[in-house]
Amino acid sequence: MGSLWRKLRILLSTRFAEMVEYRAEVVIWMLSGTLSLVMMLVWMAQAAAAPDGRVGGYAPAEFASYFLGVWLTGQLMVVWVAWELDVQVRQGTLSPKLLRPLDPLWEHYAAHVAERVVRFPALLGLMLLFAWLSGASFSTDPLHYVAALGLAALGFSARFLWEYCLGLLAFWTESSTSFQEVVWLLYAALGGMFAPLAFYPGWVQNIAVWTPFPYMLGLPAQLLAGKASLADAGRGAIVLGTWLVVFWFVRLAVWRLGLRKYGAVGA
Image (cartoon, rainbow, N blue to C red; front, side, top):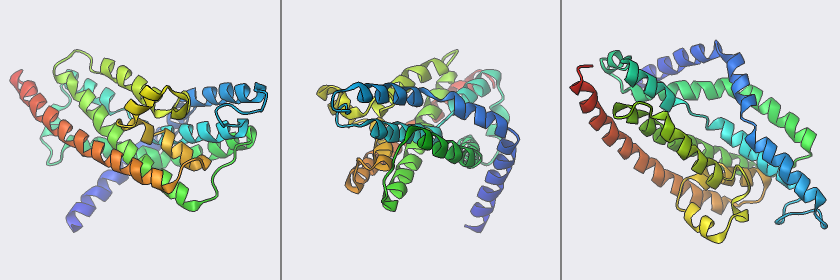
């Protein structure tokens, strides 16, 4: 265990040092992910124009709380591993990584975790600024924040694994990132980035609850806004945990098949 911890500490520290060099870029990446903030303004305007000042049970301040929660959670789940794997497989730079006594997955995962650490202080500052400007109010229960953070961690790991699987499709295709765009649409739509899931037709909701997406963005946002319970968080954690196991085994299968394909061309 001591050796494992030492390797993990060195891996995270080196990745953290690398990410600190790109801290200005990290802030730019954060500011570019403003879709949920745009939707916040749209729904706040709709609620303000409604006769009773509410749409679907949400007042303008509640829309602000929800969409700021979506923005915050989404920022914690940014993943770029599919793009990196696509480049590494096509350019052959994956080959030297295969000689190391460590699955390349952990190197990518450590880089993403280190980036979250670099991102978080600026993210928190922007969150407080946006909350003040929009008049948003959040839950007063500390356990809601703990549950939202736990769901975000599970959601990030699940998204990392499915993006990893998509990146590995570069073993068979010229550009695996095309698949990423399709999956992102499902992630954004069913996750609640455009509107709370309750605003969707019933049949869409019935499908969405079996996917990991609503529990990655919408549910943590609802917890932060005080519109979901800890029981909801528990059910969401079970669903996300199940999908995490599924994605893990899918990743193993795709990785093994892909390495056979990769080795077959002499890489």
